[in-house]
Length: 176
Image (tube, rainbow, N blue to C red; front, side, top):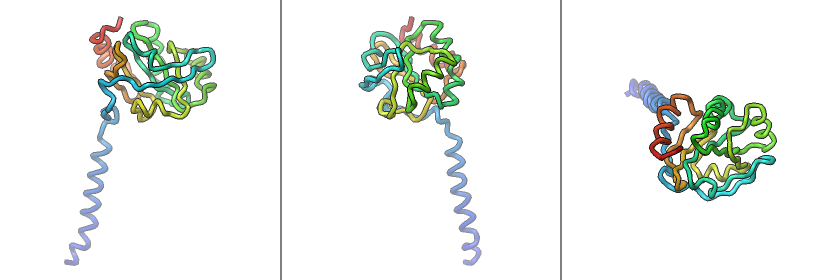
């Protein structure tokens, strides 16, 4: 019986360590989204400086890509060159939502790195991000011509993500 008292904490530790280890192996980009195949939530956000704001109505009529970003977000800077490339191709309407950020900081970032967005909405409180189901920035959504969310990318978009996941979907959705 005494041995059991010595072994029990070790067994309990091993079970807990195994549970946490399995949790660490999960890919956060595979987080499910309750918004897939549903219309984008209703919102209307102010713009940055002279740039027009962004509203739900701006997302209908053509395939769009909505990117949640922030000036304080290091991974957002990593994906920025790819967003600039996408904007240069003109294949898709690219919109930005500045998440929990100071508009002047976001404007400064876009001056430094370039501005790939047709419109930018400022989501100071993060309410629109919550409505979309955003876990953190960057997050990117592909919407079809009816304004329904068809794809969600958690984390920065890489070239392989774009070529292997997003580009085939854009073609399927009829993006020009």
